[in-house]
Image (tube, rainbow, N blue to C red):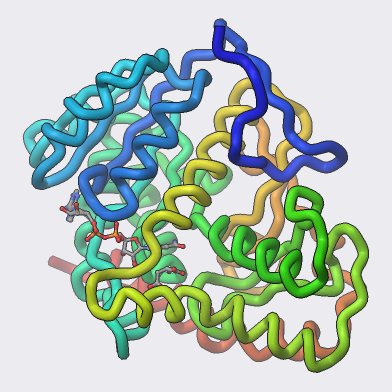
Length: 342
Ligand code: NAD
Ligand code: LMR
């Protein structure tokens, strides 16, 4: 039997995450945009999960080969491919989790918001299909700009009368993965132990690592805080520039998204101790959406970890205030797009 420690570590409150095969667990996961740079390695990582019984791969192109290839791996899930809007409904029916990395990535010199014109429409049409076919699924949105695509999805789900704010997630796990990696490197810590909450949103200054809340407790000089914060905020751009026009983060993103899927499946399975950061509808601030650590349960977001936003340093307090204007504008842009008349 498959048994052991899965390589992706979900954020749990107390202990590193040990994972035993639970043969009764059989969840269905769809990836929309599955033939892309993120979609392919993400599909592979989800195929490795013993918690998944069905893996549905959807794209507008090239997905047949990806599915044929993956289907030869001797792990439990059955892989099926779906191409084009006519097959989308069948892809989505019965899904527990829908992950959306469909859309165009950045090139050097672009902001995430420069992707809005293309990706907003892609996310809107995919969410309409999710609303019609699996309105109870957890929805994980990766497509950028996340600060706008999540509000677009919320509005579309509202228009369809099926919005459950506890089940709509903007995936910001990569910001946490990066923060954990960079802090562990700088402070010579064992990687598995490090956990840095990252709040706000997922673009530039809206990405705010709360270094004062790092676990285990670490002390940083002012210079280290400034350097680490800026590196975490610009890490996406670091990859975009290194890839020099061929795309943005795909492998680390797939890793991060697979961790968020795995955590969601554990939550659906009744695990009492699942915590992740995500960009969700929130009342932690005056903004309608805000990324923070949340506790996940069978019904989605069970609780906001509000203590993360209390007792912040002066640097963090200022940064939280400073990110609000940009985040508010991105949220409003998404809402306006979803509600404009065709
Ligand atoms: P990519 O171009 O390699 O792949 C995108 C895939 O989406 C392609 O296979 C394409 O055919 C497909 N697609 C396009 N329109 C579609 C539609 N209507 N329905 C289904 N599939 C469709 O891009 P990528 O590198 O995989 O990045 C995808 C998105 O993820 C980008 O918007 C990128 O900015 C974003 N991203 C987000 C994060 C994050 O942290 N949230 C990290 C990295 C990338
Ligand atoms: C990232 O953070 O890597 C993604 O949002 C992709 C990008 O455009 O930077």
